[in-house]
Amino acid sequence: MSKIVMYVRVSSKIKQDYERQISDLSPIIRNHYSNDPTFDFDNDVEIYAEKISGYKKDYERPELNKLLNKVYSVPSDYKCIYITEISRLGRDPKNTREIYDTLTELRVPIYVQSVGQYSVINGERNNTLSIAIQILMEFADTEAKTFKQRAKSGKLQKVTDGRIHGSNLAYGYMGDANKKLIPDPEEKPVVELIFQLYKEGNGIQSIANTLNQSKIPTRRNKTHGDKSITFKDGSEKSGATIIWDDNTILSILKNTIYKGERNFKVKDAVTKVENGKKVIVTPAEYGTFNAPAIISPELFDECTQIRLSKTNRNYLTTYEYLLKDLFRCGCCGRKFFARYSQNMKVYVCTSNINKGESCGEPRINISYIESVIYNELLQSEKLLKYLDNPNDLKKQIDAELKILEQQKLNEEKFIASKNKELIKLLDLYTSTQSSNKEYYLEKESTLNKELEASQDKLGLINGNILSKNIALSKYDEKSASTEMILGAMHNRPELSTIFRQFIDKIIINTITKNYTLITVFIKINGIPLKLPLKLILDVNASRGTRWQRPIEYKYISIPKMVNEPVFKENVLVSDIDDIKTEVENIAELASRENFGLIDTPQFKIIPRSNWLYIDKSDI
Image 1 (cartoon, one colour):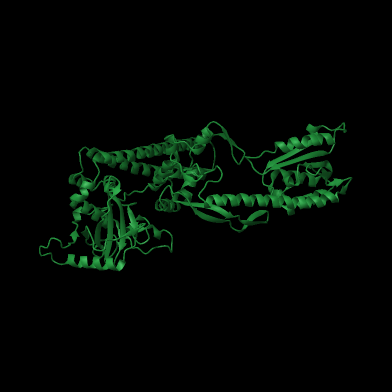
Image 2: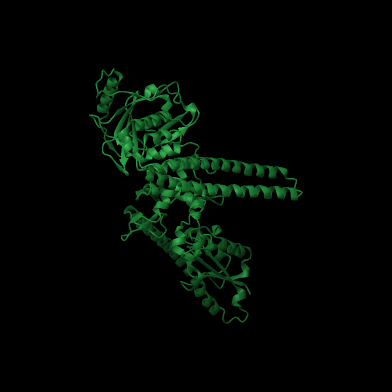
């Protein structure tokens, strides 16, 4: 007996099932062939079932493509194809019509359950059904597009209103009682930790390992527990077994929602098929909407820059930049980042990351600005008293040590695994008669490079741990002291911790080609003081023939100005001409001889013995 075919299809791989279509068509087929004594449902009926969009072409749908290839090859082997409705065969009117007409010309009937008719009757085309099918196809296409447009319009409105749509929210977010998108108090600290660890030089796999070893649950752990989850590829996993991996961390680092920019596709891409491949004619359009930020835009952009410029595994900076993350640009409001190389050792505004977007604020020598802050701290009893109790400093360093110890453990495990791989490689090479020596040498070289990079990182981690342990050993007094600051001069991790205890942020404004205004916002117990400290840097004196070859470190400390600088979102909004005039007048007075006048501002020249540096060659 010729084969009878049942073709069933649903669009969604997760939310829909085609079993209902099978159960609807089965009794109809049994009834149609109930008078045929040779009919055996189990042997004579073939079922082709798939979960895929009806808008995909026939050759893009594996089961339909397999069925049509068989039918087109030997049409006489097939008695009839059963479908519940014409939209199951396809939703694209043109492609579906082509399939329908080809099968009809081959005299292979299609039975459409929804209208209860065959496409071919007694070997002839059913013209009535043919006309009806065209109407039904156009209606199915319009219905699907209308539903899709309405669904997208509804989602777009929700996004515009700051509400959630669907249940698949970005990690770190939840909906409140009014379905407004808000940070999840349990997940928000995890997102902050991910970005902080990445900024500190940890690789995405290292971060995933840290979260897993710290037993921080994934979203699936919490929502599904031991329940089974079906993924798009058809695989199933228990929610309890899903752990953090590098792809999850990378997707979080790429998602702009965490800095307050929620992206939503407002227009689908326009595509066409060329040589059997889909080609994008017009790319999809995305809109950006406001969302509650979890991290600052500056931190997100900094991590993006690190991610885009990374060329090796688990990059960890060799240097401790004392003021990184504290600087803000008074011209554009963005953060500064550090650039350290043989010819450039500066802090520079992040507006310079993307070509053509620089705000124009000049860079500033790392050693110079760090030395100025350090010198001012040493000479100011007022600043010294702002330092927190050493016990609070100890807590901060303890927390940093825990992260470093976890990083050390991750790296040691990685090194151990690579050593095992090397041993296995050697055993395999010596135990076989393979002549492919080049392959083994290449594999060995790759493993050795990974080991070398990891061992370098482990050395840096151990160095940081040692520095922080040395710092901890000094925090046994009741209050901060000048001796403590002096002792930390060449322990950059310790000094960085001290700086962050009393500095909230530092805003940089270039006033003239000779003078830069540094506005230092001081904090007590985390609360910024209203009146910041102003420092006027004589950048001309600090310049030699190159940025890394300064001549003299000098500056003026100003507790209060007539034209106090006013900032909005870190951008200077005061009249720049008034500030320029006052800065030039102060510098002019400071350049003159004092004659014993107490209130006359004076340049402070930092002795070379108090210059801070990453490497002695910096000065």
